[in-house]
Length: 151
Image (cartoon, rainbow, N blue to C red; front, side):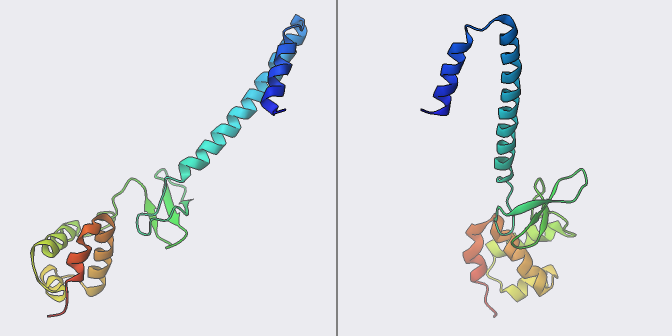
């Protein structure tokens, strides 16, 4: 016999209780309902954490990071910290316009990676970091980046 069936039978027997016993039963049931409510609330909070994922590696293995009003997260896989509401391409960038220029240059021209770096005046490390970040947002540009050989 299942637990729910046992509870149903016990509640049917409770209809015959006097007023004082019914009040005591109500108190016990409220405590039980509150306990069930807290367990359900706690399990739904655990599930809601799973929609937090790392914008760089897409891992869901992230934890809260920091105690400021803006909630920050730390990815346990790749180690970056991020804010969920901020867009990865523009967050903490000194030259967000150059990222757009890079996307446009990749999409519209046949220039090599070195020529694009010279045009935008960015270092090699920055080019490849931005490339990785852009490919996370626009994976359809992967072929365009692959075709950038040294000329």
